[in-house]
Image 1 (tube, chains in turn purple, brown, orange):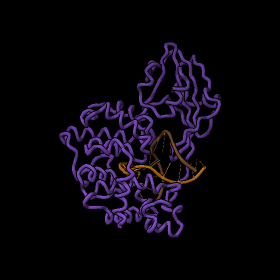
Image 2 (cartoon, chains in turn red, yellow, orange):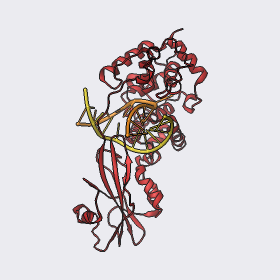
Image 3 (cartoon, rainbow, N blue to C red):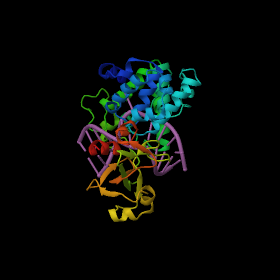
Image 4 (spheres, chains in turn red, yellow, purple):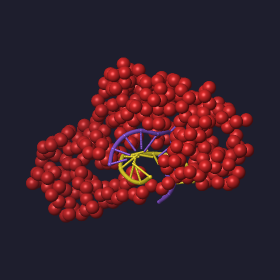
Length: 346
DNA sequence: AAGACGGGGAC
DNA sequence: GTCCCAGTCTT
């Protein structure tokens, strides 16, 4: 039997009953695919339900504010997904009359919709025979065919896409695409795949040559950067604090945080107070500063470690960006900030 | 072609 | 600690 048939047969037996598998509604499929980019199903699932409840249709999402969307997205990471989601919802709702494009070629023009997501929506919703190539597909194909081309190299991306193109079941593209992904997620998983009772174990090149553990091959990324964050948690006499929105490019764009002083190294209280940045932020000449966390909080992102100190700054009044402390939880914030707010308990 | 972009789970 | 996750966008 061909690998194509075996994958589909395996899938029909073993597929998980996921909520977005009960529909071909492009709004729901699109939403689920954006959420699941670089994200585990278990992590994304609660957000999928929250979003559908808050925004049952693309119009509801389009009519929300970006702040509302980011607040619901809080904790999922890769926040550009949420900003692009909102922008695309507005485009579909207002310019496309609420109708999603029906082809790969048109879908990929949407913000936040790349090669993978365009193929997923086109195949699942509209039965277009265009192959998905996600992390699972890379793994299954590189192992089965013993391909050593790095999956994150330009040539690797082309090679695996072409292979998936040949392999896809043109009669049942939706089923095939989901089958190969689910097979990679459940059976041919990254660590300790179930080769002993794998339906492909009579023809898998990696298994035959004992190279399952080395495949797929992936080029290493650069090293991790260390950054030193000092958050000034202002507290005024009338129970207000101060939040700022991150407007620049970079991490957490459009999310909120306490006034931030970034430094080249870990700062002592004395060093902090001497910085011009501190004086600019704390104009009140009647203030008290104390370090909240004795140990630095090291918040780990994919490409940087944020060594963070939270400084409690008691002041008489706050002039810019003052908000009642009781309102903090209404703002979308990074998990680093949310964890502090939860623990500090004002 | 190479980096940037989050947070969490498994080992 | 390491690697990976239903990837995309920017430089």
